[in-house]
Amino acid sequence: MVGAWAEEVGNLEGPRSLTVEELPEAIALSTEVFDPGGTSMGLQFPLLFSPDNVEELRVFSEGGRVVSLVGCLHQTILIEGHPLPVGSIGSVCTRPEYRGRGLARRLVCDVFRRLEAVEIPLALISGDRGLYKQLGCVEAGCFERFEFTREDWVGLLSRRKKDERASPDGVSFRFFDERDLPLLHELYRREPVRFFRSLDQFDRLIWRHPGLKRLFGDERIVVAYRGRPEQVSAYVITRARTIQGGSTRVHIVEYAGSREDIIDVIGSVIEEISPSVITFTVPAQDIQFLRLLNAYDLSGSRCTLPGHTLYVTNFRTLLERLSSYIEERTGMRPGRDVFAVGESGASEGEEMRWTLRVGDEQVEIRSRQHLTRLIFGGITSEHFEGVAPRGRARRFLERAFPVPLPVPGLNYI
Ligand SMILES: CC(C)(COP(=O)(O)OP(=O)(O)OC[C@H]1O[C@@H](n2cnc3c(N)ncnc32)[C@H](O)[C@@H]1OP(=O)(O)O)[C@@H](O)C(=O)NCCC(=O)NCCS
Image (cartoon, rainbow, N blue to C red; front, side):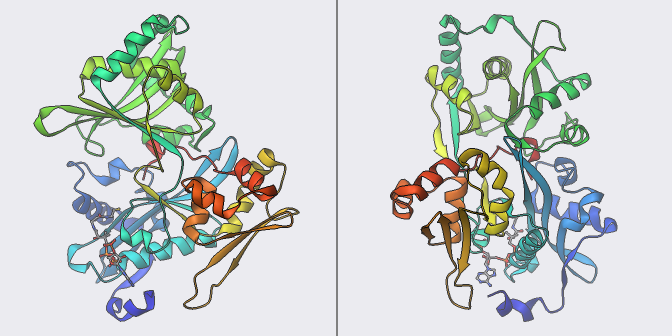
């Protein structure tokens, strides 16, 4: 399919990596195309648009001018301590006069191939365009999205005041101070499902441009502490946007630490900003936070990883990378005695099919998208029933999957 477009890109150079000298031009292209509220994309995504990362910024150029760009950042997700390397893909853009010639599609394919070559089995793509879906990307993951009004939250806080088990009184709040960074890093590092993030990376990801907007909003960090100011118990990163009619919408970008104290931090933000709407996403595995919210009558709606689609570059590698996680959960080890994955139908015109073997049982999966959703969540119960109605395979699949994913938060690309 890609070949059919070959002659149309004949004069262009690429796919190739950006050079350090071209980095300002690529940032300018991305800033122009996404027009993100007047703030440079380089400032908003410091790890993606870093001189250290130019190899992973793939482009087409003509006469030395960058005309199409796909950004990728190699990151690691830590799933209850088990590392899973991922490629976060974003800042996909083509100059208007070069659109519709298959450039972005070729660059995305190129990034997928490069990820596979370095055994990074999963791509997290920010976006759900036809472009990605035609290549096999799919919405997946198990999350709950909350959207509520200021009044809903005030109701929650008054129910919480009456709750004898809650202890909202001992907690104090303040804005982020530079001395908090190592404390917040510690809180983040204790989250069971998260991105690997060194102290230096956390430092670079924190927003320190109060006059400028990030992703159209004013971003701030509010910290909760109990007793002395260094006894930090939680933090919440918020992004506030003014919407039509002048009211404010607050999105919670990231949180870590005590779930009780996170609820109170959100309360303090609402009291101060008085937004009309508050939104945030909680991963399904964060049972403690979900139970707490439900206990105060707030419920979310099930969703996949918001704003993203997932692409598995290689299922065998994925299962190898997940083998310690799966072994710990199920006692079975992918690729060895009990469990394997086979691919068939790779020839021209034939749909690829995947097979999972659990002991002597075979499970047929009809598409790449279904298998991605089986592993990371999002498969319908009817389809799950159809794939493995009973027996050892079903018990295995239910214990091993879905593999939990974090909300990207500051690691969003
Ligand atoms: C989105 C964008 C990057 C596409 O760039 P492009 O170089 O024109 O992309 P392509 O020519 O590869 O693809 C354009 C469309 O043709 C389709 N196409 C491309 N090659 C094809 C092929 N060989 N066969 C069938 N369809 C093909 C793509 O799937 C895509 O469909 P979509 O518009 O539903 O997503 C460009 O329009 C842009 O910069 N938009 C603004 C920024 C943006 O929205 N970025 C995406 C953020 S998620």
